[in-house]
Image (cartoon, each protein chain N blue to C red):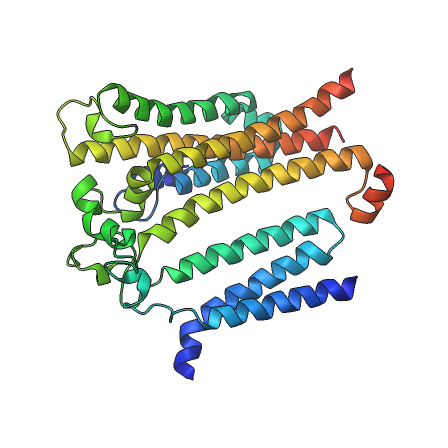
Length: 102
Length: 122
Length: 125
């Protein structure tokens, strides 16, 4: 069983390394991600953010603009996830004490 | 050849990190060590996204004087940075949930070893 | 703690923002908790206040979006916020700052909450 798991991990690592060798060169400015339009002809969002972020919100930090403005509903979801995680730890570890007192 | 290596070594590093995390999750018996493996796996994913966002000759996505925003090549892609920023904080919160569950398990069964735990449950 | 506030409010001009600032604030609170125990740390930040503050952070964010909705825009459309003397892109600037404050408050209190509950759970083991 242990040998099987090790073999699985080895195959996983080799597969990922093989797949990573086919990725585009890291940091080249003419990668697909950095083009103006994508393969299907629509505009790439990364470029739009860089060009229009300061005009839209007068905020120099582009990451903040994307986080707070363009993807604000996503960020609201993330915040609710964090809040729920805090509530889960609170409830999980509080019931324990009440069990003891009973 | 060297060019190929310089273009891909960051990807290979993150793939090896993913494998280390998977090793921790599959082969370790202690549940805390499994959680650490999960955390390493997550770090691998985050590093992969950040290394994808890198662009040569570009600066961080904060508007600076003398670098016009109309020229896209001046700034890195901001989208992966944003996604990973939220992913890191959510990862910390879920890790807190995992450890809360582990504390509950330890309080009830007195062990964190996977096999002993299965015996005690049966 | 001052550095955490600096990171939140200066996040518009340099790398930073609500998530990072909230984490730094939580680190400053947790350092006191680790160093001097729960009793002294409760003088600084009461542990039962953590949950209401986290809820307030979520409500700040959601309320900002809802206010924009009521004022006639889309949900979380900052240009419709009723702040006096500003319009257009400057209004978006302030809207982002408000929601970053909400995020920072939630992240800080939730991290403190997780630590407190873990310590409490250990005590009853």
